[in-house]
Length: 517
Image 1 (cartoon, one colour):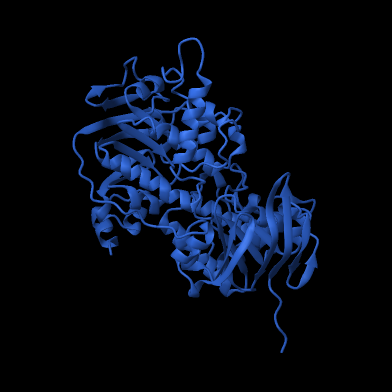
Image 2 (spheres, one colour):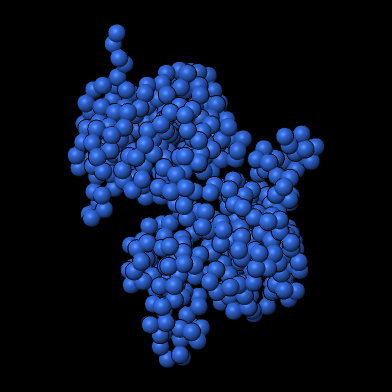
């Protein structure tokens, strides 16, 4: 009896970036016709490993076998030739091209483009039927919703002959319903003999779709388990190296007075597009209001308007009963002075200066405070002391206040921004994507800190594309779609299905009630 060779086998893969040993003697075997998950904390080395398999990086040492054959993969073309395709977290598509043009780009099939397009159309129609990847091949990609654009990426890989398909964080921009449809597609791919490798940090997805899962920690492969023989708690512990509480333990909220009130807020961007449309919300002391929605539906603009970064076209914003719109006080600097903290969604663009040291970044926005500024110069010792306190309290690594922020991982950069804003003890805190790029162990800590602020009678508004996060920490949930608030519901009444329908723009209360379990 012959033993079938694995679809993909890695033997003792090593990769260094300067002093950082990103992959350490990685060995991995992926069965043919299976869905194999790879999980790990931020910086664990999983994306680096798959980038080696796809030819973006070359391993310093080690071997790659595809279907039992040793392969020399030194660029993406050699990986594609070996039957490997990759769907990236950020799609590699030309928005102004049609689906058909995107799929054949780079493999046009000869001098006459029309002949190549005709043959490609026939093949795409076959692939769509075989794998339930329904897409209009003549549609302009930029006009397609995110879920359909992802299908185009999968079609592109299959058109190039992929037998092994790598998906990097594939559900990060999908509604729950779109994610469920993706899983059905992956099931069909597996049933047709394709091999799928799923890189994700979402343990629920690992448990729902994979046959086996490999766990990475600090550049090393620490476990290979059959999915049926494990659970979320065990996987989380393997990822972090200690027991992790996956659900926030909290008492019911007891909100009091309204600290932030928004009425009929509108914002129009530089291109004349209305990004916020008659948004009305309120946030009370002692509660967390979560804002859910697929990325790009106005949540980012809402945070920046409320934080004094963008000027609204019309509407009302009242802070502690005081109207802010149209007043000279409505600037990010003045809002901080009267007790409004803001953790921006994009820490690199708005939250940090990467060339600054950690201690310099921990006073950004507060550099005029007498604690750090005597009117002539900044007090370097006070800045360092404050930074050391933040580093210890928020478990930031490395523990060096003089290190440039660019030298910290994304998760530790996020903790520096959170520490800076939360330690100012604001009455109202705006938080964009609180755990983006943060390790699973640090997620537990950040959530608990937000609950502590809520219990200290603070009003907190949290925007997150992670539906599990919103459901876990929020007391009320507002859902945004196309710049509007579709509805606001109590978290105790929220289900993933109901929120997913609202995230798709469905306001029909009967349909939502029927969606409830």
